[in-house]
Length: 49
Image (cartoon, rainbow, N blue to C red):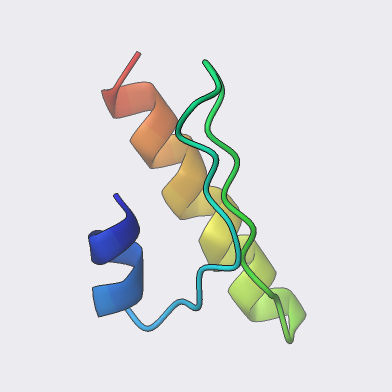
């Protein structure tokens, strides 16, 4: 996942893989990017249960 986000041009600030919940912090500079991030996150979560 990290390499996919980086390949798409996202800067990853932190991933805690030792937790049962992985938190990915992505800086958002505008509302369009925020909406895109939310859509991608929902698609990822839906496809991975």
